Each structure stands twice: as structure tokens, then as C-alpha cells.
Amino acid sequence: VNLLPGGVVRVGMVPAAAQPLVGMLYRHVAQHHPRIRLQFVDGFSHALDERLASGDLDLAVINRFGRMDPPGEERLCVVNSLVIGPPDAFAPDAPPMGFRQMAALPLVLASRPNGLRSALDQICRRAGVQLRVEVEADSMLTMKDLVFRGGLYSVLPYQLVHEELAAGRLSSAAIVRPTVPRVLTLAMSSRQPASAAIRAVAHAIRGIVQATLVPTVWR
Image (tube, rainbow, N blue to C red; front, side, top):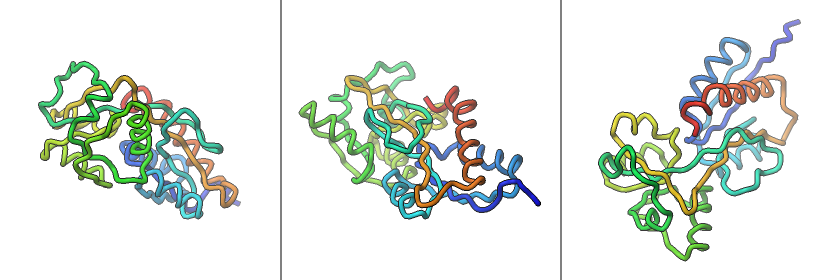
């Protein structure tokens, strides 16, 4: 009897987590768990939440904002959000930008419902300011192009733009007063008990995040 875990594991990923995690996860699973087949689904957190609740996904890496971690989810790491601009908007050693100043920039953000939008809206209500949202886009490629070619700004984590920053295609500055941290969590579907294959994939995600991603691009 073959006791190695096997079967299809359906994994959801928010854009902030997908690269380079999906490639690294596939390579790990192919090497160590050859009987497991992965199915990846990209999406923002609210869409992944719905698919977890319905049982369409087995587990997902999700963005959370705020101080409390939802019950049943495991915190993987905390990363700060940056204001992202066109290539010449910020120098490499640009000073941090205050939230009020950032809110006045012409922004492209995801449409509601969205965890980041909700977090930004809450900060705006407390600060008595309003975001200048010029365009809403639910595609990360579209957002980046609107910043690079359209001259807009956005609020994204470093791991989503580190390659573009290194190549000079985008520029960035930290956001302060307040900061906008996001928690990346690992969530599992509660519709049925996790199989050995699901547990193996979850274990692999934890290991890759802590050993490889947190020390490098997830910061």
C-alpha cells in the first residue's frame, strides 16, 4: 500500500503572494510529494474567502488588514505597503511619505469589496481625508501599467513590485503616519477535514515562506 499523500490540492493565492511562491511550491511538491497535483487560483482575498467557504478551494494564502487575525487562520508574515509611482516619481532613497500626502496623489486601487480599500477607507475616516482614486482596477497587471505608463500611483507591497523597482520601471516610498501593514495568512477550508495531501502542501507553504521569502522579498 502506497502511504504517500496524493490527490488534487486546490490552492488560492492573492496577487501579493503568488510570485515567486507558486513556482517554488510546485517545485517542492513535485520533488517531495509526486502523487500530489496542484491547482492554483488567483484572486483577491474576498473572492478566495468565498471559494474557501464553499469548498471550491482547499487552502489559500490571503491578505488581512488590521490588528486581529481571523479565527482558524495562521499568520505567515507581516509586510508593509508602499506608495508605488512612475519611474521618476521617487528617488531610491526617497524619504517616507505621510498618509495625507499619499491620499492626495492620483491613485489606481482595486474596487470594493477589497481588504486594502477597506483599510485605507478606515484610515481616511479617522484622519478626515479622502482618497483621490482616479481608476479602479482588479488586475495587478493593469494596475502596474497604469502606474508605469499612465502616471498614476498605487499602494502595493514590496514583493509585488521588487522586480520592477530593481529594473527602474517603477519607484516607491514608504507610507507613514500611519503605516499600512498587511498580514499574509494561511487559511484552510472548513467544509471538510484536511487530507494528508492538503496538510503536506500547507507545511510546504510555511517552510518556503519562513526559510526563503521572509528573509528576501516578503518584507
